[in-house]
Image (cartoon, rainbow, N blue to C red):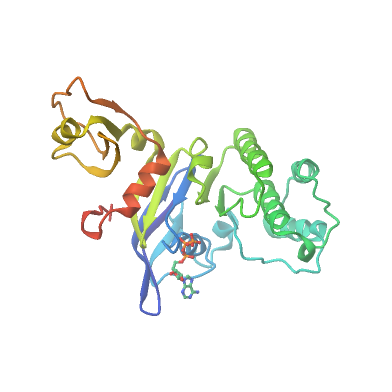
Length: 290
Ligand SMILES: Nc1ncnc2c1ncn2[C@@H]1O[C@H](COP(=O)(O)OP(=O)(O)OP(=O)(O)O)[C@@H](O)[C@H]1O
C-alpha cells in the first residue's frame, strides 16, 4: 500500500498542493485527473522522491520512502522529463535500468519494441516525440516494480499507437497485477481502463473513489424545462444544457425518492462530462474531500 499523507507544496507564493492525502492500494489502476496546473506532476514527483514536499509524507507499507532505496525501488515514474543521456542507445539505457532495478523483462521489452517498430539500437536523443514516449513506456512496463506511475503516458503517440499501448498495458497488468497511477487529460481513452479516479483541482483532492461508484452517482435529467427544474430542485446540479425547449440537468449525488414526472427521463453520464462540470463549477460551489 502506498500512502500519501497531508502533502503540501508551494513554489514561491503559489500553493501547488494543499494537504493532499491519498491511499493507493495494491493491484488497482488509478486515473489521476486534473486541469492544467492542478498539481498532478508535482504530486507524482513528490511520491517518487524527485522533489520534496514542504509538509507531509509518502509511505510504502508504513515506511517513509524518503531516501529509502528499498522502497523507492518499488516505484517507477515515467514522465515527460528525459532522464537519459541523448547519446546512449536504447539498449544501453535498458542495461542501466536493469542495474538500478535488479532485473528487467527483456523478452517483453523486445516484443513491445517489435510491435511498435522501435529499433533498440537507436540513440535516445534521436527519437521523435512519440517514440520517446513509446520507449519510456516500454521501460515502465518491463521493470519489476509494484507501482508504475505514468505522467501523460501517451504524449505524442498517434491514435493507433495509443490503442496498442492501452491493450499492452491491460495485458501486462493481467499477466503481472500491480498498481498503476496514470495521469492524463485523455479521460475518454482511460475511462474503461481505470478502476479508481482521483481528481485534483487547484492542488486539492476533489474526488477519490472507484469509477463504478462515481458513475452510479451521475444522473442526466432530460425533459421539458419546467418539469426538469422542478424535479432537480435541491439536488446537486453541477451543469445543464438547453436544446430548444428541452433541458438537461446534470446531477451528481444520490437521488432521493421524489416523484419522477412521466415527461422526464434519467440516465447516467460519463466520466469526462463529470470532470468538466466538477472542475468548472463556481469557486464557492466546489466541494473538496480535504
Ligand atoms: N519547479 C517549479 N517551479 C515553479 N513552479 C512550478 C514548478 N513545478 C510546477 N510549478 C507550478 O506548479 C503548478 C502545478 O504544476 P504541475 O506540473 O504539477 O501541474 P499538472 O497538473 O501536472 O499540469 P499539466 O496537466 O498542465 O501538466 C503550476 O502552476 C506550475 O507552473
